[in-house]
Length: 125
Image (cartoon, rainbow, N blue to C red; front, side):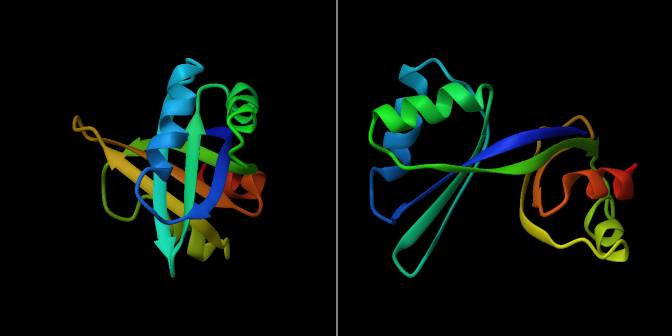
């Protein structure tokens, strides 16, 4: 489990927005570790975990893409039912955002945006 910084971009939900963000990071040589893009009533929110958040924010700013950041946790866990959500619920921790992938091999990578990453780490230890 590692603490990380999640980059957030809020923008109009239309073709090409995610491509512009990803292309900007690619041209700056910044690897995307995880991405989540969702929209609601014509607005989109892109959340990214990148290899270098400081450089990513600078590259996005140079491309005139407004972004913010929020703390998150990057977990690598056994891919099995009940590994995260019920444990955090029992600890009364609100999950603001979660996205995950399984790459096979019995492991899952999960990104959690929570109000208190330290408390969340303790609940999952």
